[in-house]
Length: 118
Image (cartoon, rainbow, N blue to C red):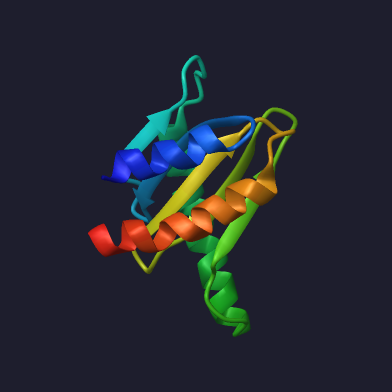
């Protein structure tokens, strides 16, 4: 079920390359890479898990509420992360010119589906 949901998100986003459901401990639950992309979404996810943990702590320290979403855009890649709960997040990697708005929407509507299965 997880793979199907992740695949739908990635395949429906213009420029979508890969998606992952991962724990904040850096352990992948499920991942999908859209052929012929070679994005190592597991490595991207592991690095993000560490960064997201730090951002969550900063948000708590600043008392600005819980972390919901993070976007990172570089010359080569854009990554959108949706926090599901205290243990898991869902991420979509895309080309930098990819449709971030559609990715945000698809991650938002997919989150409850994945949360129900966790």
